[in-house]
Length: 126
Length: 205
Image (cartoon, rainbow over all chains, first blue to last red; front, side, top):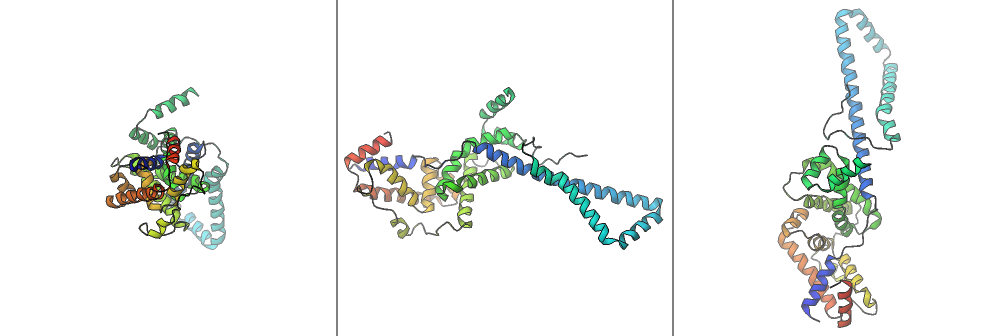
């Protein structure tokens, strides 16, 4: 057999596409998966941001009120010190409800993707 | 509906940099289009490396997920196809390492290459010669399969393959040459004129 012909055959066979295939709606599936992940991240950031804002607002309000009614704040601190476990439990429950509302339920029950924010842009919530 | 069609038409006319800026602005239609545009490239690289149809879709999905997550780090220093191929190559290699599916063969080890079976006309129908060559390619060590796919199938240059795989240009050339020589040797003494005509027919020469 001619050497050149054999070369051609082999080179041609190198160019034949392998049989591996993806499903017809692969691109849609990937996009949906990406959207879901991004939304989960956005929701989590939104939750953390809101939690931070609420914590800061409460601290600032408490700090300001300290100058108006020092006795009340001191009583409040004494109450927290006396009921640490209960306070932690209530805060935890409230925080969990908030987390479920902002993140978990959205993750579990959202079927259709909503439009994403620009990448890297923080969620506008206030 | 018309709006969606118009949007699809717009994305299909875009070049890579426009497509990237659209994706970075949150246009998911543009991302779907990017996946459609490059899924063949990713399938060829990933498929040849992992050689498992049942896990191919998951690995390809992982590749495009990484593409999306790192798109803002893409700096036009190379073609988008080269960049995506690099991600596909690294993801596939990591996948093989993670699940210990890669037999750590030294590609220069002649034992690994001797795994190639001899072509025997009693084992294969003549029309299966095409399948035979394919089977032999799949039996080659992973490094050989990678460079063959990138060079012949995807038509990347040596420099681009170097960027993708991190192999030196000399090694790439050597793998290409040796893979070809090996197959040639296997076929040289067994393919008769009739088979050659059949192969020509198959490959539409």
